[in-house]
Amino acid sequence: MPELPEMEAWRRQLNDPVSAFPIASAGPAHIATLKTFDPPLDSLEGRRFRGADRRGKRLLFPTDDGELVLLVHLMTAGRLRIVTAGGAGPKSPAFRLEFADGAQLILTENARKKRAGVWLLTPEAADAELAHLGPEALGLGPEQLGEIVHGESRRLHALLRDQRLIAGIGRAWANEILHTAKLSPYALSGDLDGEEVARLAAAIDAELERGLELREAGASDEKTYRVHRRLGEPCHVCGTPIAQVDFEEHTIFYCPTCQTGGRVLKDRRLSRLLR
Ligand SMILES: [Zn+2]
Image (cartoon, rainbow, N blue to C red):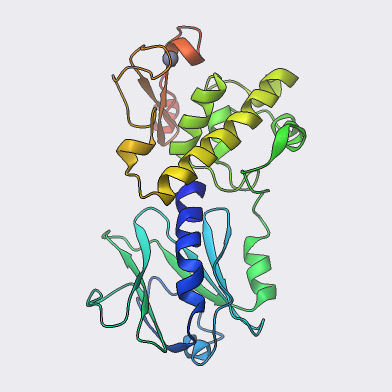
């Protein structure tokens, strides 16, 4: 699933093209993709977006009259792009907007199960839709992070991914961040001392900024991730082969030398725990 660096790179790319011209036609939208019916999609027609905003992993397109917000959550397989005027878009996108100059904003989802979503909301309803999200991950800082990690004791990998606590980090960047912070994915957040919290806060910013820079330059997953999905490859810091462990429904990647004092983490899949 695209996380903060990927979404922020797309936001920056989309900001100018979506606000260049008013919307000429809105739709069609796949029935599973469009999550709202009031206000109707065609109420966007004739209006213009102010630009592209982002909150956590969601993109927001507010109209410049302040009356409507188009909210997009790409989930795992959704992709959003601009097809310039005269360009050929896909025959049946999950969602489409056409601008007055003929350019199109296209959402596609290459997956059997449609999970990406589009909501057309009033600004108040958009705020309510996003109210459960924690503060943005980038720029959190040690003080605010300290309050979050000591608020409830959770395994660090799960805590970083909990959007209600911190918005924007998923499993890939949780792997990268914990490796840079030299902390075990299984460490309990309540046990972190001040120095470890500061290290984690610095690692969150360093990794998300590194990711954003790479994604803005169009880097692939292969070029971007150093730990995530690198099973058996040498750790870029110490050369130890990267290990993996199943935790709840996720696979975590980590370096046993840099992060767990040489210990191999035990499988903690929910299915196994319930057996
Ligand atoms: Zn290492």
